[in-house]
Length: 90
Image (cartoon, rainbow, N blue to C red; front, side, top):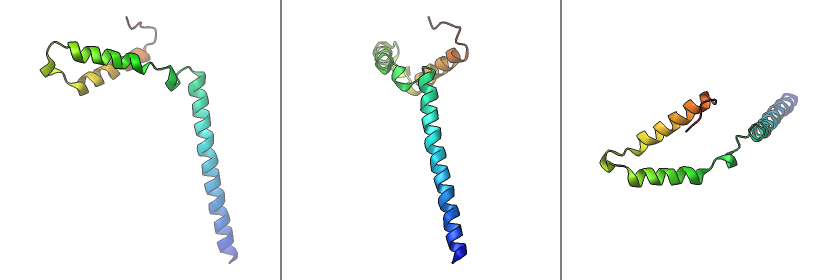
């Protein structure tokens, strides 16, 4: 009986520690993202959607328009720019 109580206590303490670590990590992550200016609300999704619509509607060869390939190319360009922040986008 004593071993069962000790085991339950240890499991409960372990789960509580994991929960505290998870919540603390989430709070710290949110604080770091907000402090660095890279919060999700700083991304202008409307501008990205507008650019996507313009590209899709005015693309010369619509049969060759591959949405997946264009998306990966855009992500690659963003990644390259962020890797070298001194490079202007224009």
